[in-house]
Length: 477
Image 1: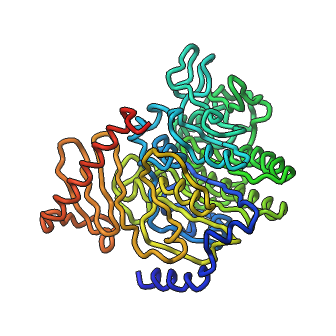
Image 2 (image 1 turned 180 degrees about the horizontal axis):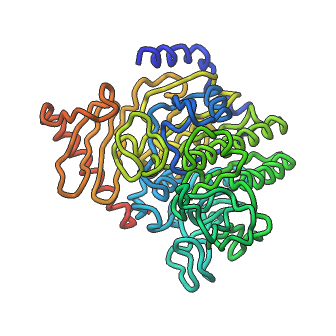
Image 3 (image 1 turned 30 degrees about the vertical axis):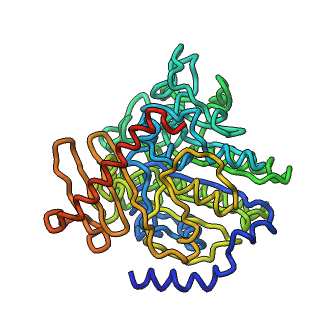
């Protein structure tokens, strides 16, 4: 903690001139939100992983501010994605878990706000906030004649999109093998080596959609999936820069969500490990390379210095994989730290000095209020937010968050402050309480030692849960 505090104090000397007023004299900065899928807190080099090679992410993280206590809005994907775009807890929106609900048209998204400010907006990768077709069977929920959850990116402020409804293989995303090498641990759930002979494959059942009832041709969708996504992002950014238009780009990468599929080149990097580890680790390194490729493109276009990049994961790592939540308790679908705390950083060379680290709590719901304040944009919506602006934390002017973060998942809830966390894990289980500043691994339940404080925090949590129910009923709109 002493080291973190020193870093933050030093940062003030560098960021003293970082004020909202300076943005007026600059061109509008570009904004990119990158999110991996099921990437654990401990799956990247900048959080201490010594096995998985993520040199480009590590370099980017070192050039900005690392959030070592950054939370996904939920312990699974769809809810977190809703929080990223709206600044609101997903339970306010009826999105409790994966493949549940959809982002409502009444919600005000960061893409809509920036589009109104003249930004070119694009969405790429995994959508997972509604179905993308009403004409055919697609992915988890798309089906002919079903429109209940039809909700496409252009209905929420995106000019262009290239997205799947949900998960896909991380290599050759539209197919899977007719026969798996079960001796190596390959399966439809876990993953497999690249299919070299496409005749030995079946259709996976998910498409990339680029417009209303318009999907990309399968012939264009072969090879490493993150590369396919970055290809489209580069096209999008090229058009925006040629038109001297600032861009807002959301890149939600499928990796390393199962099934992980990896080519020989990236498996060979991990020859000393099991086949399942080669598939998993190789998929992350392949993703890392494409993020590096994207940043190199921004450099070549001369826009990297004026581009704000945020990186995180949508939840903790999947069970029964070689993934790592670091030392934290829990994994995906848990409200313990391992299910929620994810790798995260922000880079903006023009405005944020390199080498910063903060241990102040932050969450994906903070994206919208932080970005609008940093860009000096007024959010005129009266819909209440759960997120706060991290602007003063990034500048080193704020030493604590000073507002709790609430989390919900079916039969579970938690309330996280700067120091304490109370959690009810299971409908019939009692509350637990932890001091996260001295027990981040949640080993010592101290609730019996602090009855007054635990009662206060549980009361606050229940009041917040009640407010979310009112929001879900449409009372905010």
